[in-house]
Length: 149
Image 1: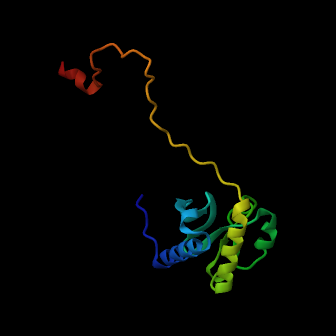
Image 2 (image 1 turned 90 degrees about the vertical axis):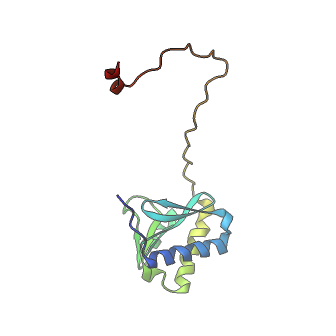
Image 3 (image 1 turned 135 degrees about the horizontal axis):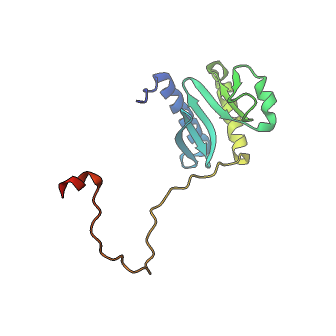
């Protein structure tokens, strides 16, 4: 299935998050990836903020989940599931003070957040050097070539 292009509004929001995080924590501490259909920004290897459409995905302290849940223009990532992950609707970050609040909360929690384990990349296994070379055998032929005998 082909990937749909992102809207101008979404691209603008992604740029705004990228610039804000680069200003606050430096571009080297930040990594950008696609995660769950959204553009996710990781700080020090931990999910911090994501963008999907016009909404922000913000990782916040799980112990304050109830407090954030009661705020306007927020909804849980998965109700009853992952504590501390919230979608913020555009009216929830439309003003500069609101924008700064969500960025500051996410970055303040980031040092305490648990990093998800890195995926292991499968490297090609090298043959042990101590083994003798295999005996020469006739090359195996695929079944589609058997009729050519």
